[in-house]
Image 1 (spheres, one colour):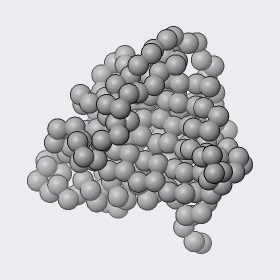
Image 2 (cartoon, one colour):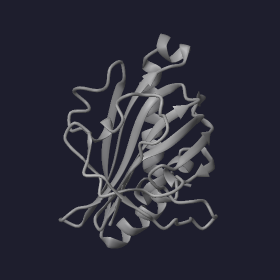
Image 3 (tube, one colour):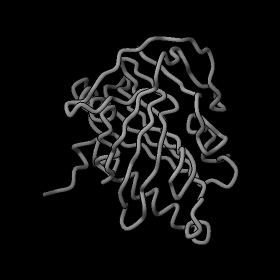
Image 4 (cartoon, helix red, strand yellow):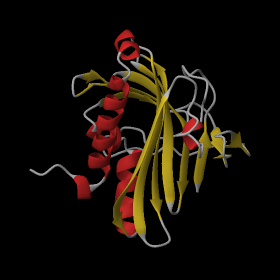
Length: 216
């Protein structure tokens, strides 16, 4: 089991961990637009394992058409045994030296404290950003992480990705997010925030689940 949270350094928003809050959709952080969706992506241990591998090797972002570069794991020990309460506040921290793992192309796996640069466009909308993994969890039937914006994005906020292998053997993929527009165009045209988020969600789903792969 691995759990991690990383608070060192700065993200550009105050409500760190709010994607973990049960009431995100009803009470999002101030001036932000919340979003969430869940999809059944199959069943069984094999599907959970393959989806986990894809998620932790940045496939959701890459599958969204974003280039992932300059992946910088946190230096020194991270925190283990961290969970979140109903308001998204971290509880029960403890320190752990974690082994660094790598994807087949040599890119470090997702880990708490990792900083990454993404670059690209989503249907003409800019997807550039510096992001930090603010929390990560790996359990036998539950794997996920949350990314927070550090700089360079047209929006400020957080998104979380979660895979669950449930007791009924079904595997579910859930993405939750909140975005506060920072670029002038997005502040003037708030519907662009929702449009951008909807497109990202669908691309994440196609990247993680073969059930939703784009037909050739």
